[in-house]
Image (cartoon, rainbow over all chains, first blue to last red; front, side, top):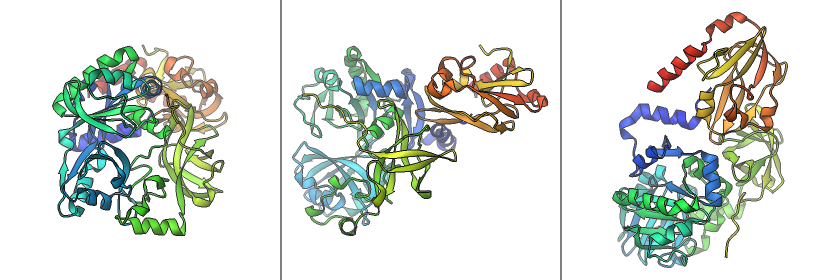
Length: 383
Length: 129
């Protein structure tokens, strides 16, 4: 038997630079909880506790708590902060109210991804960016080097732990722990204030397709914040959830994963993220490339599919359309809540419509898959 | 824990030899490592495999694991129940979740395998490294 890809990679990474593996402030807690630890982007992270399936179902039906302290934070402030953000990202940060958040991307001159990010507007000329763990140093350097004069760019990743609580019970679990009016907070808004005794930023955001919150706190307070949430969540069936469940949850919600579905070779439009691409906002890095792509028409686009014959599609598996190799699966997994085998891949624009059938090559065997509407999973919004 | 009548591989398969037929599955250790099994891929009756050649695979949400043939032979029966009930691998790895029966081509190859005592020792060695 082979170890899983993830575990093998983790093992090799451990051999190569065991001293360089980074730990979040919650590392000891994960071990106490029986978390199976792996190396993820240089971080020693829990891939699972009870298992990806029960954790996934807990988030969809009750709530799950995730350590996402490996995510990076960059602060951008100063008189030219808005100008810098507008220049480097494709969404329109000028539309953000203070305390509002938007999903966006740092774009290359080619209109591809440096990273996909969340932009928090702290003040009229003050922004806080949440960026991918694997890209944080690159992103900081990118922003620092390209910032307009009069912008202060600060690498803040070491100043924050981050805990995500996701699921239909998240609000009820968290509300008693803070004076912040969580119930009144709208999706993609945030507040700063005391949470479980710590100075925090709390946002109504997440990477699971559920309602939920993400809490940024000082690393020294992370254990206490985690424990208080766990205590409050006990009566609601809150479960710790690891990276494996985080991945299947985000895939069901068709949220892109940098490094799999998007990177510096895929454009924002190809990734089917036209809604974060505000070409009318004025010039920004990558705008002319994206505009040209829009005018001449895309060649390919990211679609969601279901495997309709027996088999599980996994990332990197080859994709064939009418007998011709046209690409590969960018993300693929069993979907624990939907109980289907789903995935994402780029298809030619003339063969991307819902119902289109193609083949995923699973251990040399072509297995039929079909384009389906996305997101695969959409929560029913409660009143 | 590990049935004495079986032989084992270092890849965590077991084989129960009954005359010229060998019944093959994965061990309890293997199912633990895999976690919840959601998919099992089996060969077809009539397929032949050499010793240590992958004959199928077992998948969890996160991982794909190939399963290797402990000794060479021809597949004479498959446990097609596993296709609809892959969780049997977790529930009953040494009994209900047998995967294939093979007609062993060279019984000499069985000498390369571990007995239950040797397999348990091997697991202990692995755990301590």
